[in-house]
Length: 376
Image (tube, rainbow, N blue to C red; front, top):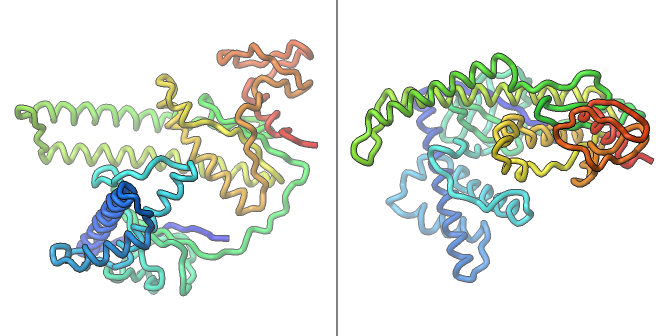
């Protein structure tokens, strides 16, 4: 089993410049490879990462106009084509959209790190072409000859090194009588069939609401600055605009980490119940996002991230994970007698069974049905 850890780096100014250069080179190689891949497709040729990488090495890296590519590790550009190949594989499997060009403003600032050059010693980690960088972590990191998919990335404020290594599976004793059903919602993040209280929606907390209010105020502020510095049809970026935009990025970063931390705590709490299986609905999240009234609330709940975390934590702890059929009527089915109430509306928050008279919260009823899904 691969265990992933994240380490916060403390690079010097010179090292940080090299890191940003590595990010730029990785983005350039990815975009060049994507353009080449599409060109080969149009010409009726069969593209592959090996052909694209070979063309890049022969036509670009040997060109004197692109000598700046040699200032960073060769693995940075080579693994950009691995990422491109993975993007196309996911596209053909229907797991993601068609690969798009990366932009300096919106793309994640990350690059691959050569695994056999990584060495940890006296609070410093050696990274090829960058040197020995100070780091801070609460993990005990083993010095291994090989790490899995090590990468550096910048989150807008700090640099991090993420890597994985082989780790023994958790040998926990599971409760063979406990089948968990989890119903995701907007009022609450998740309702679990065996928990008395639902897992709350962190976006309704005072801290998040204050941050969202601050974000709205900063966005209005920067919009007024753009209008004030408008010249004909052009917007002039001043130092004050750049300063305000950085503040906006930091607020977005803080909100993102609050939501991720809440999801980690929620999924960890669920897995610690040690059920032998967990059942969730197969939600059409992209379809749900098309509802203009609910799209923002659905996005803030991070349903996809919640499901992803539950999946890998189940795999790590040996718990069976099931996705119920997308058209399974978990909300319309009575958890007591099994009667299906066809005329149940979205506004009906209390489920009242016309057959046995059961009165229960709609989401709690759905979670119980998911827990009993396909049980013998």
